[in-house]
Length: 461
Image (cartoon, rainbow, N blue to C red; front, side, top):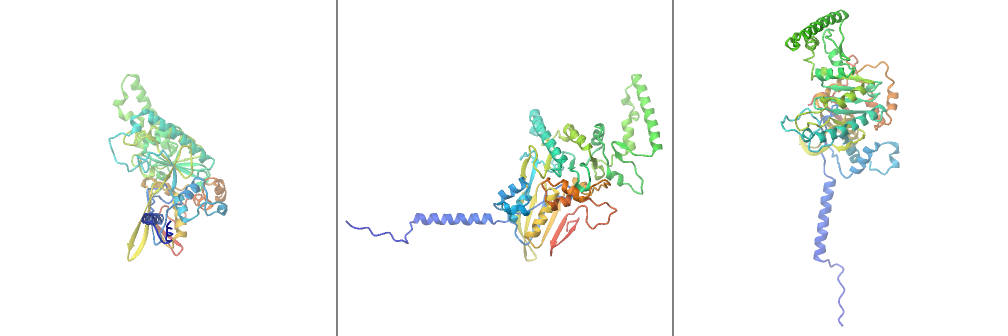
């Protein structure tokens, strides 16, 4: 028998060669995807509600790769990757994971085919949405939304949620826990509002203030501050107006007894007289229409939002859809959402700059977290922000609380809110009033970091 010669050690079948080449090509493609640049755009005012875009320009790359798992775990469990106990955990603490953790938010409802934030720039359409045409669907989603709002309010009362937003079709409401912004009690801000909205709150016996309307007068001439639904005016004018109203009511009742329809005499309508006297028509839907509610009145406001028809639109694609709830911590029924990120490379004056755009509902604390992260990842960068215009009054509001506890106590009270000590220190700092000298603007549109120093401005360059 003939003995077969042994196979040469250098021999490789042609099929194996092609298989190896395909594997190498797949590996290179995977490596390219893992190291690809992802953009960052964020929309949010500094101390108010987040907007929809934020642009970051830097000379170094910011990666967002497979660290999603650790970023998601850190956000859901409210873990700080830079804390002292981080060594006991096996989570990825790289800048990529921290960046992804900053780009997460809790939201209800979550309807991917509808734009739920922001709601003030929706296109007018005659088409009615699914929840507006089917009453069963509308009632079902409103029932779930009611439970989510109650859950958020309970978390806020026990200081396990620092703040949350209720974004309605015509207004935005910001609830903040006790200690936030140096205010000792839980409170809420609503903007913009209308006379009908404030009248509805007054009918529910909700006491409120309009701080911007009071401060908007010139030369100390106060046209009246609507507080608790009542006008604050001199005693003599109050007596004259009461006499006037009594005469109008007597005339109205006398005509009704005669069987005459009072609608034929509009001048006898007390509501019309009151409207002309208060002169709030020029205040509606402006910054001066901001409403401030404090203490136990926030519970009445929650009940008002649960039952008010003005919270749910009746026309358009969002007909029957309840207001959008946004929060930095989980609550009943909430959905974990991620901000949209997009990266690009810009050549400017011969230099290459990496730009990242992040869009979505960016909460105020997210801006501070991203600035801290970028300061560690790159030597210099520029941050451009575009806020939601209707929410800017939140940043401009300041409240003097004589009974406020020291800032250290406020921070300790919020130790379980999910923020680390640095963020708690920022949100508990009282807002400066106009009389206090400060170099910090109430809002800022552009932040620049260079040579380990920050500069900012309220105008885009």
